[in-house]
Image (cartoon, rainbow over all chains, first blue to last red; front, top):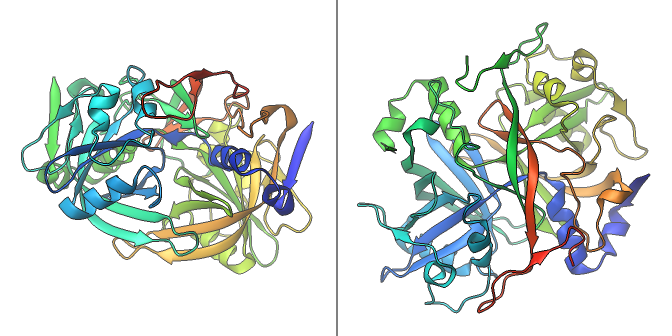
Length: 216
Length: 216
């Protein structure tokens, strides 16, 4: 049976229930840990599910964060230092990653609290997560308040990428499934993946062709 | 062995290779078909992998599109009508969904070309995809050009949601895995999912607790 919800039905829902429903709508979400440090070098770590691609040249990544929640320290840190890291959550650390969303007091390191390790990189004023297999550092390019609901759009440019050599395929594609990167649905559900296939660049009058993992 | 790429390495890559690499960085991406129609009611359909959650109250969803590619018609249509639909890509239609990214001439319906069916909804000036199990319609709220690279941020408010009754759990969570919704990695890889688990709301000094699918 099909359920249909209109604008009024949604407005009348209980707040937490609506949050779970609307957070499920966009589909599977990326699972990343954002690493920052304050002006004194104290590390901070927070899970984010709203990281998205903006452009490849220059390499730009966006993320939406809320100024009034546990990502408040993330926002002030990345503004202070101009840097942050994004670290893929994998199937070995998904529970620790989720725990970073607890409201620890400012000055408490989520790394220490959840049992993840800081990895420093020369020239990058933000901590990596040692246990993450694919990680990259960004220089802050833009912080913009979305007036429609007060959330913050953060845009950064990729300055450094670290990943296992064998996960990059000949055509540039990264096999993130082989790194056990997880996906999120809703607010709290974590998923591993199984590849259906890669498809060739689509052209009119020609059905897509299955590609090998190497893109051939 | 760990491979490290710096800013210069990335800048020196061949263009298509860099596009595949950078598009792989954000993690798993949502897979949606965006449905629009022009002022004459001609339907248009395009796959998008950059749909993300902005807020639950009001229910706001964002997406990034490029003005210079196959989503050009999508952009002009949603500006003309003020409406668009987002339709989850599932494991039964992932190949047809991918094929909508071919550059069909304006006026050609991707629905007809790839073999997907238009579903009309009263009061919504945009077509749904009949074969999609979870779909929702949005009223356009904002179109903003991101000056940093010329891509377009589109924000819409959810006006109508349609999905199988049994996929909504008691606490509002939608089991999109049960609907066979797929995830995308890079530009062309499609993945089904397998749930690791749901976790309770995180609190300091307390490890996360596994939740049932119903959120208990």
